[in-house]
Structure formats: C-alpha cells, structure tokens
Length: 293
Figure (tube, rainbow, N blue to C red):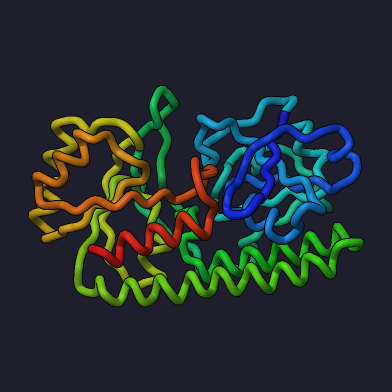
C-alpha cells in the first residue's frame, strides 16, 4: 500500500489514506521526498500525495513490487526526478499521460560523476556514477522542478488549477529565498574544502561555489579503520576542517572526527522524508550549521 504524505504546519506526517480521500482527491505519486513535499505544497489538502517507498529503503535504489507498481500506475500524476534517479522507472511501463519528468529540459544542468561503488546496510552494492541525481540540492533547480510539476498538475487537475498557481508562486519564493541564503552562507566558506561522507552533494557544491570532497561511507554505520585512515589522508591533503555527514552519526564517530580536528555538520540530502521538520526547515537548519563553521 502506498504511504500518503500530508503537510501539517512544518511537519510531514505519513498516514494511510481512507477510501473516501482516495475517491475524492487526485493522487500524486512522487519518486522521492522533495517531489512529495513540492506536490503537497502545490495541491494542499486538495490532493493525496502518496510516497511509495518503504521507510527503510533508499528511494534512489528502491524497487517496487508488482502490486506496488499497479498502485503507482493508477495515480493521476507520477512525478519523476530525472537525472537517473529511481532507475526502476525506466524498466516499468508508466502511463505517459500521467507521468512528468521534472528535470526534462534541464539536461544541460546535469552533473557527470565518477563511479563510487558501495552498499547500504544489507542491500546490494550499487554505484553513484554517470549523472548525479540529487538535483534539488541546487535550490534554483528545485524551484524549476516545482514549476514543471505545477504546470503538469494544473493540466491534470483543472478544477484546482488556480490554487496550484497561487501555491506555486509561494513555494518558488520560499525556494529562491533558500537559494539566496545558501549563496550568502557559501560566501563565508570561500577557499575552503569541505569533506562529505557520501557523494550526493554535487549540485549543492556547484550551485554555491563550494569545494566538497566525498568519501563513500555508509550512512549511520561506524566507519572502519581503513575509512578513518582515508579520511585522515584526505584531510591532510585538503586542509579541511568541516566534515558533512549524510545522516546523524554515532556518538563515537562524532568524537573521533572531533579528535581529528573536524567540525561535524549533519546534512540529510532528503531523498527520503526527514524524521522531523520538512524540506525548508531541514535545509535551513543545515545552512545555519554551515554558517556556524
């Protein structure tokens, strides 16, 4: 069953849709959390936003079951990220009339990457290569993705098109304010190198003129001795003083980084829903933490 995401204040809560809500409101199925947040902001309580990915899964590499695919195919809008995100969407027949690729037309802004192979927990190994997929970490691109989604939703939901248009303007303003804030924070980090535990920050680095060198650590796991050695070598090479973690690390990992002279910042890329807050509040907290470095 698809999970439904509802915006209530600053919190994004997951709950199951009632049969009535499924009948009364158009359904949007996004492939990641940013698109879920954008769709919920655009449609408000007039739409059901159903995030299909299991809570423990990485939406970039999640594979739906046959029954889950059937539910997704019935949605009024299927929101894709593009840029190679959610490869399952290239192997499944999705209704063209209901499917929007929110970075279509933005291909010239894609970032090519080198391959880094690793796994998440007990999952299969996978590679981050070819095209970086976390496009929304450039907040100006996120705003353009919002525009693409809004236009498509208006076409599919003509009865609430005016509401979507109003919400689109407010959401774009919020994202561009976040972009301006990121530009300001990044100016204070000029000529410094930031180390990151995972290679997902390419769009953020390019958009805001930052130098970010990435490792291939697993989120939430205690790094091995070899990984600590690799970090120490990269720190010595770059003179970095800040380490960005994809997810909150264990206390002993934080202490080890501090002993190495590294200040830690937790920067969830938000491909999946945050435990607390929403897209804007989490990203604002990240910028606060980077500004304090």
